[in-house]
Structures are given as C-alpha cells and as structure tokens.
Amino acid sequence: MTTRHLIWIFAIAAAVLAAPVSFGQNEPPYCAFEVAVKSPAGTPVAGIGVALTQDEKIYDTAITDARGIAQICDAPKGLVDIEAGGHLCGAVSVRYLKSYWMETRRVSVTYENCSGDDFFPYGGCLFTIRVYDEKHTPLAGVIFQGSSKDAHTLRPQTSISDRFGRIFRFVAYRQALNGRFEKADYSPKSIVEECKPGGQVERDRVIILTPTAEAPTVREPTR
Image 1 (cartoon, rainbow, N blue to C red):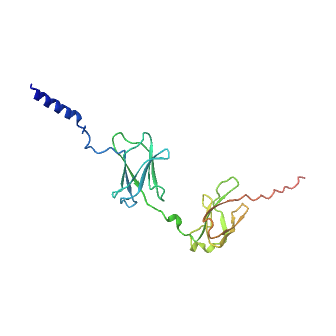
Image 2 (tube, helix red, strand yellow):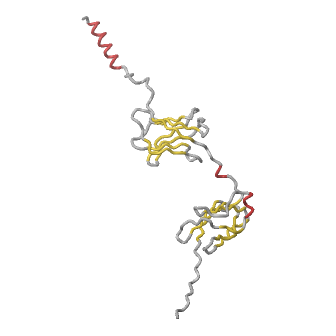
Image 3 (cartoon, rainbow, N blue to C red):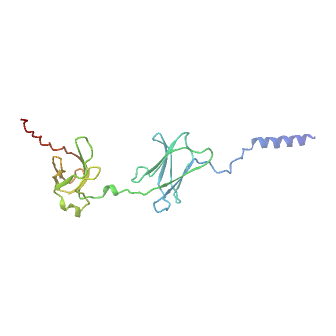
C-alpha cells in the first residue's frame, strides 16, 4: 500500500469521525401531550391558552392552532393537570394525568367561553334564602308572605321553600324585601332588607324557624 493510499484512508476516517451524527434528525420531536379543544358543537376552538400544571404550578403552556390543537412536549414525572381557558369563564381542567413513555398522550376537552355572563345587568338584587330549623336541618314547605309579588314579571322567583330549604326572591333597585316566613307548627319570622344600586347584587340569607311552644296539658286533680 502506497503512502498516497494511506493518506486517503486516514482522510476518509477523519472525515467520518468529524461528521455530526445524523441518526434521528428526521424524526419528529416527542411531545408528551396533545390537547384537542372543541366547542360544544364539536368545532375546533383556536387561540385558547392551554397549561400543564403540577402541584398548582405552571410547568409549560401552549396556544391552540386553527385545528384547536395545542402541543405540550415537555412534562415532569408524576401526575399533572391540563387546564384550558386560563382564568376565563368556562375554563376546564383534566386532572391526575401521567405522560406516556415516548408516546404522545392525547386529551380532548370541550370549552365554551362564557366571559361576560357575570356582568349581565340584573336591575336589582337576587336573594337566595335558606330556611332551617334550630338543628340546621333544611325546612321544605315554608311560605314567604310579603313584598315583591310582582317581581316574577322581571325575574323568576319562588314563594315556597324546596327540599333544600331555599326560597329565591328578586327585588328591584330602590325596593325592599319585606315579609315573613310561615310554616305550620313553627313561629313565623320576618325580614326587611333594601336593595340599593351599587350594593351587593347576589345575597345569601339564613332564616331559622323554631317550633311553636306546645300548650301545656291540663290534668284534672284526682279525687
């Protein structure tokens, strides 16, 4: 073998050793999660933030594309949560997920943005009244007698407590919830509360009814 051949062999070997390893370069990157976000009608929802969290801390985020798909390629070991919608009304969460080893885990969620519903003008106050007995047991069949009888034309409301002890009353601005709660064998109780513009709109109130005292039994003296 001539010196020229040896130089050529060494040159080829040096080129091979210096060349970058190309194995796997054409393979697609492994993504731990692929999240598909659809509307209730089944259409893709684009531009929605998707987050992967662990122990309530954000690990990674992504945005859904035109197909409603968001990919989160990196994930920690252990259980994680997938959240879609961020802090918007209607946000959804899929909890206690674990990534697969070298296999994309696909998660489908249904999301409907309801932002703006919380700012709907009610035009008054919404009272949720919960009626209990002295043992804090809900009382069904309690009747509300009083004002705002015509308010049902503005908002739905009820006059008799349900099995959870709830009575729902609507009071327009600058009016008052004024009446009393009645049930057989219980002492009635009254309520008076104004509804002013700028005040709290949704209000929870608790009413406790106590049993009426039974008349003492009169016994005739023995002879």
